[in-house]
Image 1: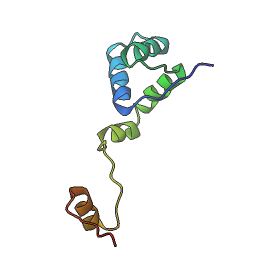
Image 2: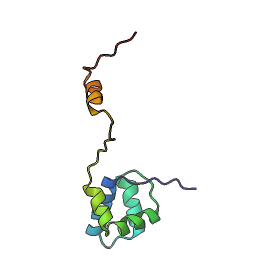
Image 3: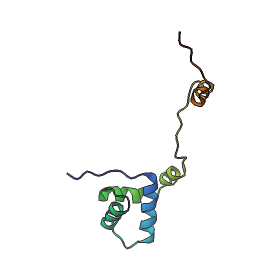
Image 4: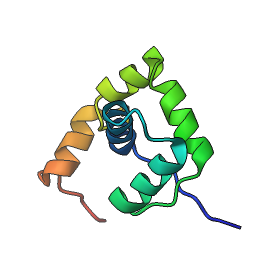
Length: 92
């Protein structure tokens, strides 16, 4: 059984751009491109899904999103002090 991995958003963008520049390439050729460029084993069905989703607005929105995610906190002041190192814990 062949173990395949998923592509990151940046890799998907590069793959879509590459396929637009080289329209004569088939999905099998794009699989070998991913293998050479990203050093990842990607299945042909993954290539198909990426190319189909690249035409939708969801793909464009996911590319435009901020890459960093921040979980909302209940006490932002307390967390800010802890992260800056200015909060001293008293041990009894």
